[in-house]
Structures are given as C-alpha cells and as structure tokens.
Length: 151
Image (cartoon, rainbow, N blue to C red):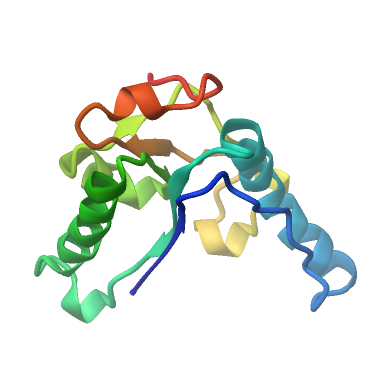
C-alpha cells in the first residue's frame, strides 16, 4: 500500500491534531510527529510537490518488486507534472529510496530518544535520524523550493 498527496497548486496543507489520544499518549504522539510537521512546513509550505506519506509492503510479499511498482507509479506522476516528490524515510527505507534514484536532503530530522518507546527500538536509548529524500523528474532541480537543499 502507498499513500501520496499531489499538490498541483501550492500546498494548502496544515498541521493536524491528534485529538483522539489523551494525556501521555497524545504527548508522545505529538513529540514523534512534530519534527516531521516542522520539516514539512519549513521546506514545502505553499509549494507544488508530491508528498509520500507512507509506503509499505506486507513482509510475506517483500522483495518481489511490489514497492518498486508503487514507487514507479508515483515517479510517473512526477514526470507528468514536473513536480518533485518529498519522502520521509525510515532507516529501513534508505537503500530502497536511494536505489530508486532519490536524493537525500541536507535537512536533518532527529527523534530524541526520550520520545521513542524503548520497547519498539529493542531498548535503544539513542536519538534516531529520520532521513529525508526528494525524487526529481528530469529538470526537477529547477522546481525545488529555495528552502530545500540537496546533500
């Protein structure tokens, strides 16, 4: 499955609210999404682009080209529109996005260890970098906002 937003006109995206959670759970969720929201707002506010929310393939079907097909579909959208694609990657997705021709951004995004649930990270108590990428169609570098710098 994959979820992408295509902003043909300048993005009207606004930060959401995590109103369905309360107390400590809401605080933790907000601490996890705030760096993502901050970076997206800083880099892409009022810009034209494609946003890759999430891509995932069930473990039983990984390494069969399904993720590549999903991503190639969105690459075609980028080629047709001339828009760059913004990607917030997991550590596990780095090799995939690099293989697909995506380029890292200079912008660094870090989740602080105290915001990460230790049981979800095998007890790791260190900050975790969230890699940011952009995929560009031919000539797409001219379409990057001034706020977006390639590594």
